[in-house]
Image (cartoon, rainbow, N blue to C red; front, side, top):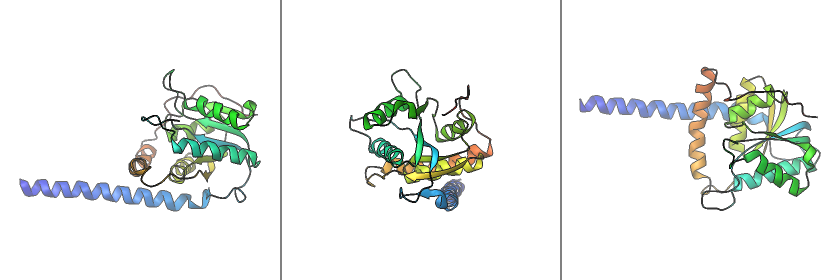
Length: 211
């Protein structure tokens, strides 16, 4: 009985490890050509889609992921690489509104309000990508997030018929982002599970024209 338990445990560990390795390998390999780091090199697009995150951490300090995505979106707009910014994030309760927070801070930086659109149902990366296409009519756009997140988002987009490219916001120190990096490994496995089962966004809704 004990030997069977050891064998079963070993098999589970092997399957998890294999899944983590190959999901990461495939996503990295297939998206690398579509991810940019230099503003001068990225092609101009009508819309940049910022993938939302919370502004403040539980301890009350500013979330660096948020800060760097905000700055990157502004830099792309200021450099005329995008005409509009679509902020996609979580607004699951009246007291929590990622898109509106981003919008307010973008306006403070100097982006005109008329150039900012909000997607309040970007609960997951899959939701943000698919809704950008189905709700906002975007077949191509620039994804704005950190490199690890861009890779996953672009992979999902390609599988959903979206011609997306990514621009990397500055990454955070490895110690700061340790938990996020661990979660990302499992999120990449879930990408393949969601695609296999044809997972759809939690909400769709009325069309919005960006103009």
